[in-house]
Length: 302
Image 1 (cartoon, rainbow, N blue to C red):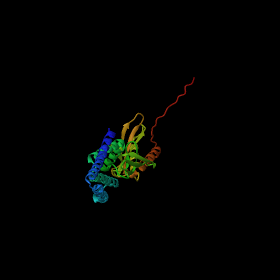
Image 2: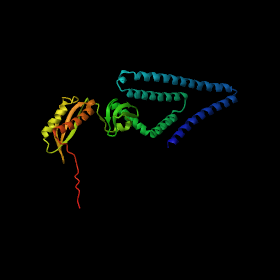
Image 3: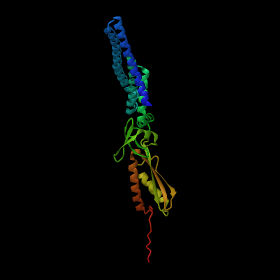
Image 4: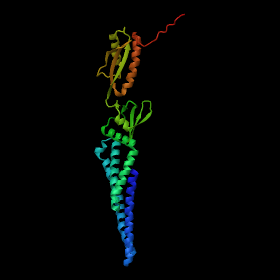
């Protein structure tokens, strides 16, 4: 279907050019019959179409210069400088491409080429390209959504439940993440714009939640005081909100205690690892058992 539309539009353009050539030939023939100079007829056509071509070229080159100057001025506006660098670049590119398409159509109109056929060709080709690149267009649209709504920024640590890492680059089609073990992950923007993204860098503080199991014969008051003292004593923990500890579950073989300690977002993992290590050492020193599943193997004698 698209191929037929393009061919029909191209035929219309070719037909228009052919009609112009035929008219020129007829006038030359009539000029010969009437005794007029053939060169004068040809010269008239050269002057007419040469003038059109000259005006079209002037409009084309002057238009490109003006568009580049205009886009540059727009990018340098203070309002756009407040946006992310990617957003300013994308908006400038959009504006430049749109104005150049309008310039191209204007030049074609000056040359006298039938606009209906040209617009048909442009529209059909654009549709064909859009269908062929629909995945890329989805990523492009996703990039626009990310830039407009800003669910994350460069330098944020995010998790989309598939990949996680620090945002190191935000492109038009893809976003690049660097994981804590220094792997680089390239994620299509369409996935990020449609997924649930957890941004761990928005807030300055985070809460460390630790679930610690103790045996049923353990004095929970002593265990809670010990956990709270470890949480408060760590230099990475914050005084406000103050650490919290309580019994949160009666399991099949253990009582579950939950310790909650607030810290700066950058200190989250260091505090978590230190607390886990210190809790085990403190429980061993206090004789508090951390239960675990075990299996009794009974040998049956014959």
